[in-house]
Amino acid sequence: MADAAHLQAAPATAAPADTVPGELAAIRERLAAGDGRMSALEEAVAENTAITRQIRDAMVAGRVAGQVIRVMGWMAAAGTAIWGAVYALLHHGRMPNQ
Image (tube, rainbow, N blue to C red):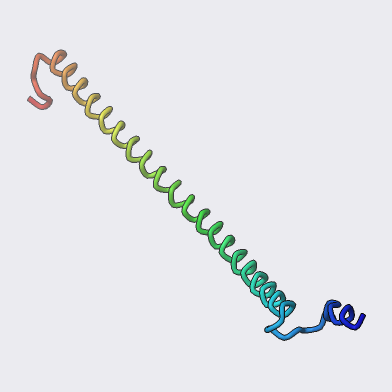
């Protein structure tokens, strides 16, 4: 029966690190610290994702604006060509101020 008393679990006090309970406590502490670091990384990634999304949206808006300007330029060129042709037909090929 003396052996049974020896096999009972140690009290829940701070155990030295070279014992199994002490190693488990050290592992738990490292896991808790790792959880804190992981939470900080998750927050940083979420913030970075939001910033990246804003940059992407600005780039898309710039691309769309470029396309709109390109189409407006094409329409202005076509309108000028049509106006020139109509003017030439109505004025017998004479340019303005002639």
